[in-house]
Length: 400
Image 1: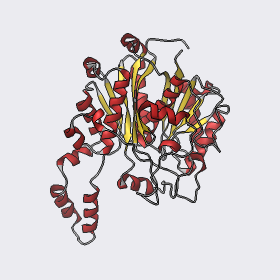
Image 2 (image 1 turned 120 degrees about the vertical axis):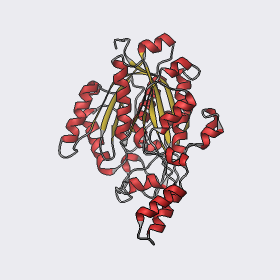
Image 3 (image 1 turned 180 degrees about the vertical axis):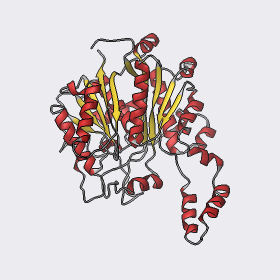
Image 4 (image 1 turned 90 degrees about the horizontal axis):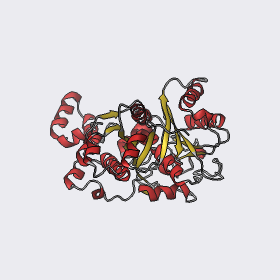
């Protein structure tokens, strides 16, 4: 591959998932002979979640006051962002952080579930819902909690804690938010509008309100854990959510080489879109994205699929990937970490970059449905088909 100054390269990775924190835990996930992930089948029964790991927040969020004013969704994101900055060598680089762009994929923040429950219960006995809401909003919600529900507060807290104070963007919109965040950073760096960017998102699955949102579309898997591609349609909708976060430091090759930074992989192309999934529309759109990114020309490449587990779209994704990449091993990583929704695409890119850097053959996460790899791959394709809408593809190549 010909190298160019405006190549987009990955120089920092920050990861937290049910598999653990940091590179070592996720290398082990990729190579360790996968059997069963870390899942909690009791707290939210009949649903199960992939819980967050043990985390010493003070390693990346040293001030207790900063920790207290965040909920776990924000703590996870700020923590993983700090890991990525450390990994890329930016953590102590005040000038580098001050000029760093930041693009975050975020949900709507976390709610005070006790207050929500109180309002629902009292609303059943009163005929003045507007008055009731005003009373509770003014007497029950802490101002800091109300602010914490704003989606751009994750980016705000990263700025406060890690001093990343270049331009800031926050995307909302489920899986498509993560696709758009990476796609925007990639396009800006390739165009010379940015030299380095922090990109990613976070997910707290251990929230009744989040589970309710997915359960409302009959999306959640029930009972005990099952492998991603083999989930029983009689046991719920197929989605198992996971708590965690994934952040990437993306740079132009010129900027990375100027700093002497280590490079995980080159991000060759990123594209996303959304539209009707009726008829042949979905496959036609995905094939176009594969052509735009250069993924269609890859053979024997590692395919990291961000399939959510939702039965119909996951089955459709598997069929389409089999036709576009017939000789490539597919790995559905949500079966190992849980589905991260907004952070699903950054997570897949981070795991693919680790696999390429380490030159490893990635273990099958569903041995009955995923072909073994004969050896490491020199390239990777990362896909995400949103559980309701939105599709994205990224292509990575190994250095050297």
